[in-house]
Image (cartoon, rainbow, N blue to C red; front, side, top):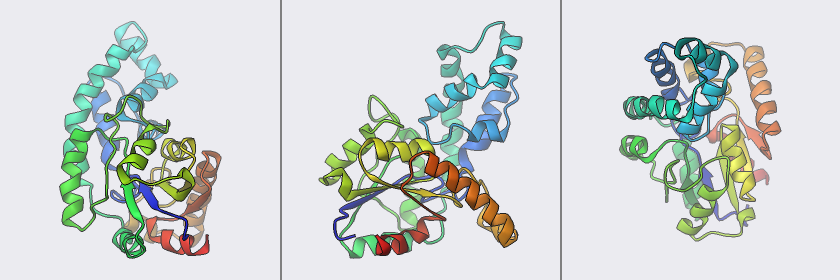
Length: 257
């Protein structure tokens, strides 16, 4: 751990919005406005990508593409993605702020890092206009990372490494092996691996489980274990070096490293 200079966190499902709920209903409602039925599972599948790319991935889903073809007489184009995206962004600006409560244990993890002089970076699949709504809500709860890289800040977003590279510059940290990337999605994990960082996936607080803390607490240990195992497998297959339940477990992991 003495060699770690920075930890870079994702936002929804990682530091805020336990279960990553903010975008889900918005995606479904956006497609409804075009006469297309999208499920929550279809909305969750591409999670972690920049939101334009996320919509493009949903458009490429066989069922959604077939619905679009039946309704509009052609398969969805990038111009169609633009139309959905234009509706999505302002709707998600409102939703993201409403779902910006910090995940339990997040502040304790931040305190652990600060006390050891470890810098705190952040990247997200949200565009900056959405994050402008989230930042003050997080700050009011005590969370203010040292930088923020949004999906529309650079020429290319996740799963490429540019957001991480810019974070290295912002925080003046290197080499990549001295940085940990923490995320609940595969594109977010791949963003870290592409940059050469150690990666930590979050199983229970993120997109793959999609439950609130209260919902998890009401489940049996066996039921939670099944969800944890599934999410862990997917994150490990996506490139995560380690998988923990939530960000609250990061200090214990770092003590073991």
